[in-house]
Length: 274
Ligand code: NAD
Image (tube, rainbow, N blue to C red):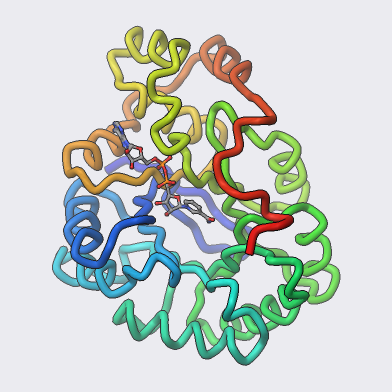
């Protein structure tokens, strides 16, 4: 396919569209991952806490697509933060995934009350040096948290995966990331399905002959974001990947920009999340 990639500051690159597999048990994750790889996806986003790393690994192996052609992300869960416990949790993730490296390892949440995300990041730097995590990044970090880990280690995360959808656009975070060459990745890119029936999105979709989901995914792409829509339904998995044959006009981008609302957050606030 002609899918776009984004290059990180460490030289590696990530397919801009990936499959998210949150809230999908092992026996649903395996067929979803296989369906996505058959549709052309080469990027899968899981996490230890999703309890489906085995299913993801199985889906990859049964797809027939070579491991080296797949960009695989997993995440460290909060209660494993700390230097030694991170190294241990990483080994356990690799074992469940059935692989000897991941393309991207993320600290799932800063969990500031634990006071451990700097030590955790130092373990991530070690894993990157060992080559077992090809790239290292974070998720749900505020600019203050990013400044802290960069200041303590000199190592800049390649990516920050944050909640981001057309009604919650995170413009300040994105500006900060850009200044530091950190790629922004959108989680819950479809607002968990809640904004699919928005009338502005619907009107634009009709004009392009596309579905609302495709317009929203294209909006992320045209904003330079990495996007990981979730579905376990093969037809939707395919639909969400048919987004490389059109681009939104400047006028339509401007229309969607107006949907931004500070109160549209769906998930927890990373300052106080577990
Ligand atoms: P999402 O925004 O991707 O929405 C998924 C839902 O939208 C589906 O369950 C389905 O109901 C609907 N949908 C998907 N495609 C559709 C289509 N073509 N037509 C109609 N409906 C469609 O929500 P998400 O799962 O919360 O987020 C995506 C991924 O982001 C997750 O699977 C996970 O990998 C990641 N994530 C990360 C964090 C984090 O803290 N880092 C948090 C939440 C999610």
